[in-house]
Length: 340
Image (tube, rainbow, N blue to C red; front, side):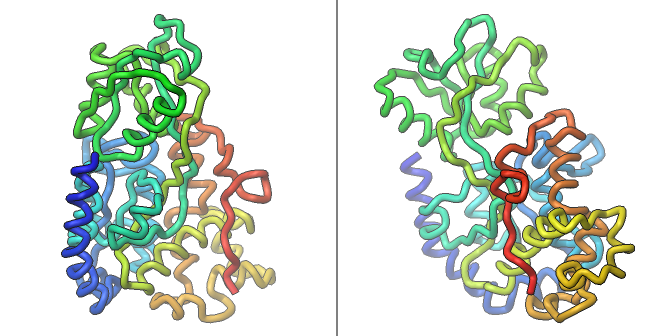
């Protein structure tokens, strides 16, 4: 892990120059000229980013990229999804291979400050958990003393695992793999007693196992994992576009603006809705877009709640409760600054 971060920092020192040069010309201008957004995605996680047999991507992180494309092009299909491993995701963003990274990436201080990157918001509040086989009879992480635990290299998961077991004076054996796919296969084949990753990922990966009912997710959450989209340092306009795309989707949910009613809402006398949909003010122009930028997002992708429910909520196979990801008005942490 130390080698990975050391390598990443070296790349950052050089790639920030590359990213900085790109920022001078403007990522938005490059995306418009290219005619398509390059989005760094995961290698396949149900509910967050997963292609089907025809190569059609779905997931809440995928919808983030589609929403940005909708804001720019009025077309959510103008996205090229580029699968990236946990190890390669930051260097691919730093080098300019992708314009935006949206693939279950945890916001940490070192990533935000040392790698030449900016996090543009939190589209999913998560935390690290553990999955085990029911037959082991284990009902707590604290009963995993001496266990072998599968995890993925180059992630905060590996670091959190070490911190938690050291703090609780528990011995364990780490079995680490380069990709999430390898990690899950190793767990299912019996190479380790437990599998650890973000709790949302555990629920998603359990569905892929041959006998999902034979496995349980333990109750403890051992870390804070604020997940969100990432861009390069040095291009504030691009950062604003990605950040306010997320905020627009949150504000739309709070105001009751949906894919189904957004056209009718264009006639609303509510000043907040008027500013959101661009019938009042010139907020789109302030970030280099048309004033109906948020209308485009909602029309094509929907509000945050709609994206959540169809991908990972009650309308999906995962059926994850909103919990911390509910709006602040409903006891959650999702809160967007106002458009005004």
